Amino acid sequence: MEESKRQDLNVFGMTCAACATRVEKALNGAEGVEKANVNLVTENAAVYYDPEVVTTERLIEIVEHAGYDATEQLSKKEKDDMLAANYRKEVRRFVISAVLSLPLLLTMIGHIPAVEHTAFAEQTMKIVSPTVQLILATIVQFFIGYRFYDGAYKSLRGKMANMDVLVALGTSAAYFYSLAMYVLAMLDHMAMPHYYFETSAVLITLILLGKLLESYATSRTTESISNLLALKPKEALIWQGENLVKIDIDELKVGDTVRILPGEKIPVDAEIIHGETSVDESMITGEAIPEEKKVGDAVIGGTINYDGTIDAKMTKRLEETVLESIIRLVEEAQGSKAPIQRLADKISGIFVPIVVAIAALTFVVWILATGDFGSSLEATIAVLVIACPCALGLATPTAIMAGTGKGAETGILFKGGEHLERTSKISTVVFDKTGTLTEGKLQVSETDQADPDFYQTFLR
Image 1: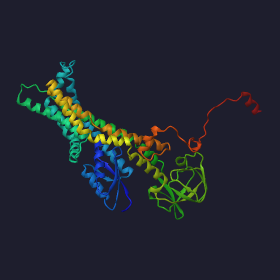
Image 2: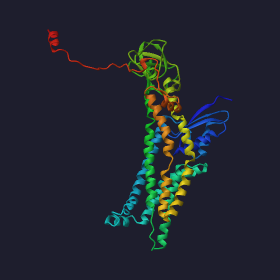
Image 3: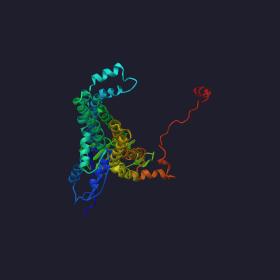
């Protein structure tokens, strides 16, 4: 048996903790998979598997069978471009949904006692007639809201229920009840139906707005990785024969000789073959005082060359450098699960069926207590739509990402969410030396004006 291999997959289409739990369960249940962790915030699945038993292509098939799209891990630029395109698409959907829902929202104003019999309310009800309401609500429900039906179908096909099921159930109940009332009014002109078209449309619009805000909030948690990546220079000056040529850092190979000028960042881990200098390695060691370097000494990519011009031979592949190792460690820590998150995942896995049961009970209790079908339906929809398990699944991974990322920015590396969670119990911190606690950058702390007579004496 070969040593287990790690494969990172980008998983797209997850909307809540139940989705992440379903993908994780599918991967962990596959033959040859030792362990799989799925992170809802980063949309990443870290899979440890036996390459003799299962292939990467098979892992992707498993995710797709669960109802989601998956690819081998994209580069940061590719993923950022894809997320940016999806975000723009979501913004367009929200704007269209908001524009279509606004007239429906105005009809709700007509039911407020203070304005119910005003000219504004009467004019609004004439313009936004039941037929107009039906057309607007239908577009929002099935064009804008198609994603919820699609997500609910895939979820139920995988024998689990996610937030899409709740949204689809709640908004469909309001829409189809209103549609039935509309048909009844067409058949019986004496009927006085009460419509809920605005309920379904406005709910979908608000959920889309919540998704946009959620995407923005979670994207902020990945900034620490971007800040670490920014430490790497984009280009390097290398010797090609007797000429110096500037190339993209991704084109560097082990054995290339790099010329590093004073004040520049060292592009890769290398060994000095010519020249002497001092290097600021505080980002790695915490030591504020620059380290003297000479021929034969190793230099670390991302650190800063201070005062000498040096030539250095690249000794490690780009993905094996110290900085890349730190970035990989932070990514693994952000993708790991703290004990509290495992508990949240278990709860979210059974959360949706429980909510559906509570919603059904709510309807029965309301209909028995009031006998009013409309108010009973409103209460049921409220339970279904408000009780989405998004916060349950997002809160913990977002906190872990923010904590590990902020720690990395300040030079503190956590190996996983479990260790971050344990920091709440820390009572004493022991440091090995003061150099790691100070920046070593001198600055003026106090000024004092000299005696004016001093200048007169000095000038003579």
